[in-house]
Length: 256
Image 1 (tube, rainbow, N blue to C red):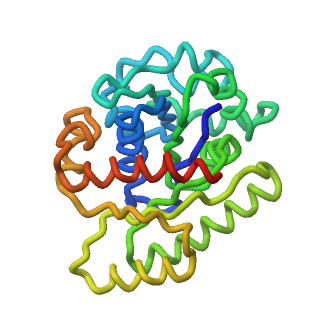
Image 2 (image 1 turned 30 degrees about the vertical axis):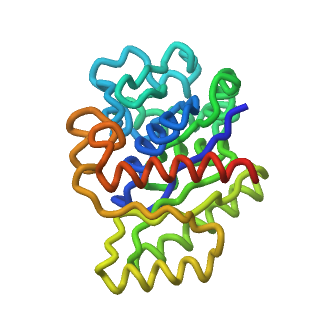
Image 3 (image 1 turned 180 degrees about the horizontal axis):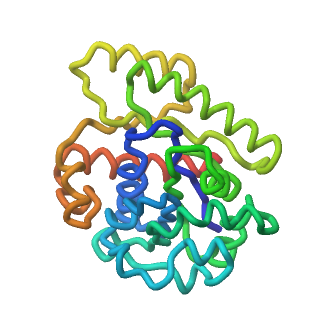
């Protein structure tokens, strides 16, 4: 059965989508069967995986509202060698429409259960807010991967996210836990980055992934070509880091 992980952080611009797309591609390079679930109405993970969100006939929007299923809505990322449950702007409307539905927090969990046996990993790219969509992601997941920059404001946002995860664990999903913190956009030349990184290791111990993702322009360029950075420029430092992170995840789930 698949291990389901949310890539989440309530702070915007911390590399959630970059992490979700490149971890999916990195895991695929380690021969893992991966489904990337785009739970953000912006649809950036969909586009970054090489799927045109403007041409979608069915998307995660229809899946959440019960008008379609995962089998019908999923697409193949040819460049990343993984499957995508895509999103587009329609998904923003699901927030309002789901309020009236039964079991509204578990709609995604129930939908993914139908294809769980077909994958080793399911990665959910969450929007940067605690919304009904994010709640669906947290209720469906076994754990949360938190990408964060090593800067002061990131530490402030982290405590909010940890509290949210604790509340969901207590009230809705007893399986949910923090799998690990991933240091992204890391610049070793900055003293502050080094200091915050050391604080994270001191406070969270082995919850901090060993892999560190460096600040890398090739990762930023890749989405405009509809490709994960891992396949866009496999020898770049960013791509190598995400491939290493994929290997670390495969090892880490053995102890979960």
